[in-house]
Length: 378
Ligand SMILES: *Cc1c(COP(=O)(O)O)cnc(C)c1O
Image (cartoon, rainbow, N blue to C red; front, top):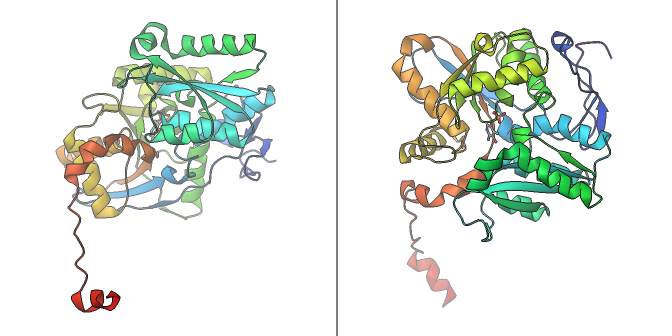
């Protein structure tokens, strides 16, 4: 295949040789293969958000539509990570994250589709670690597809960290004669972020073919959780013809942490570039990871009601909340710009917020059956 030509996508759950975009062919290591897991390209369309600064256009990339149970931005990284798991002959995968991790859910579903067992280490932050965590949100689908869930307490997570916990489970499975493949936290390592580089190629293609905004975008905005999407899109935008400024709203750690973390990912690809030069990272954590203020949830509700787009409370909801706050504060900076907001998925985590959401909803009516019709049944 010619370098930079359109990547051939095999049928779902089949693999194919990978050929990078020409602007990324100097990066290494290069992945050899990938497995088709997501529905790509995801649509880009105009998003008529209320209260935008004069002349500001916002468009949305629907990475919430990469699939159903297998949905969200993590699917992009899993195309490369699962291909490696298969290539090294793994019979199971391990991954880890928070109790409502979208990444863990996507990995569990992808693994089952590829006939691999899946072991998840989940930090049980709110419920007791020896109590059944229930079926809320992502847990329902992980348990539905038969993922093995190993709960750890917040304290254990703080003592050992995900890397060591993953290694411990890997050792245990090896000693039981299994062949595990460890998928990193959030899928964000220098292999996984090829999926996010591919997204830059996908957007470039959509712009070039004018299936969306033909003049391209001035800015690309997304949430930042484990840093892979940020690193991949920022590098991709910089190297490709996109040349959009990338703004990442961090929803768990500080911007300083993520400048360092994404630097590590860029160095892992030998990109020879400083994260500070290609991405603007903004704090949008609010009161803490996966915790929502009523104002944030009210905002998500208002956006859903105004536009029909439902953001997730943990990532894209906080990112747009941060973006709109910035647009309000610095109207001049955003005036006349064409912004692409990446909706990274995560809708199932909304079920974790039902109690907090209930008071925001309008009341349901008791339908009054007209008397003349109800009479028919007598
Ligand atoms: C993981 C995740 C993100 C953040 O992506 P990273 O690559 O981990 O930074 C954003 N949105 C949703 C819904 C996610 O699940």
